Amino acid sequence: MSNKQQHMLKKEEINFFDMSIQFISPKKSILDDENKKRPEWLCQGVPCAVLYQNETNTTIKPFNKSSNYNITNETIKNDFNILARDEQYVYADGYPNGKINIIEFTISPISVKNLVKHYDNYPLLKILLEKADQDAYHSKGMNDCITVKDYLSKKNIDNDTTSKLERIGDPILNRSTRHTIPIPNTYTREEFEKNPSYPAPIGIRDSDFALPSEQNAILRELIRQIFCCVNAPELSYELKVEFGIDNIIPNSHGCEWCGELVDISKLNQDYCSKEHSINFCHRDPAVGTKNGNVYIGHCSCNREQGGYSETQRIEQIVRIAKYNPLYREMIMNALKL
Image 1: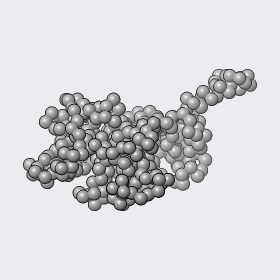
Image 2: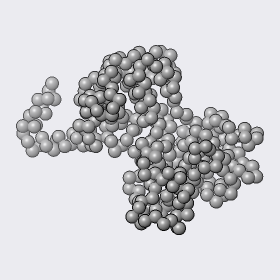
Image 3: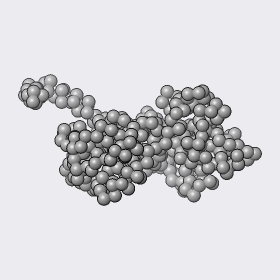
Image 4: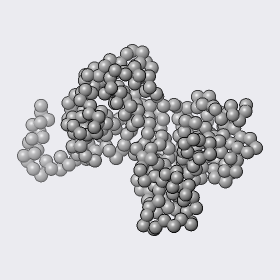
């Protein structure tokens, strides 16, 4: 097989379970500015399957990228580590439990293009479907992430003349696939500046992280909720089968905060500009968009909840009621209904 043919291999054409497939990961974040019209970050620690190697170059398939990368053998030798693997896992530091189930390498994102096209006459529904797709597969990002232009001008960081008061770059990528390396909240600026990748980004927020299987599960659940909302059109049997979605009960989906049914006809495109406009809400904002933690609710309710989890809000109410008999009575009477 030629280098060009191998370079064009798609994920479904690669047998990641083949024990002859070797996995490697970059020691530091690498900017792929030679092979692509739009340069991309290959983040430190992300496992990559080695697909092909000749005298000068190696073709790799990064875990978090849709396309293959062509890297010089010199870069592979100097800037990559060999990862251990077995028949079930690739062992990669930085990922939960230090390993990734190989089946995750075979899972592709669900495309909503056909679904959006099918409901072309429902503009509000299309907005929700596209938002669900974005939330399921892309991290929120960080605007302070260094730009490619600035990075290339500051490659020799030792000779950089930037003021010590100016912060260069950020460890968090400005949007990326959600199975990029998760960076814990405890990671400090000092640690980042000592990192070999600095000032290049090294991953995504821990709360944004989700493996491909969970991302697909999140999208399916959000689609299910959308079609359970008031004034949502019917989802055909064929589309239910195509997307693996069942248990759709029309006009049944309610906001978890207030209990009222969610009406998609009340969606306002101006973010949070109208009471009871629709929003993607989180039971615990600190956990992020994880399966079971995100739901379609009201924007006003989301503002009311604030940055607290449902559990924290309940604990606050219990604490207040504990020392105020009037509130205790109000709560007990409300729960009897």
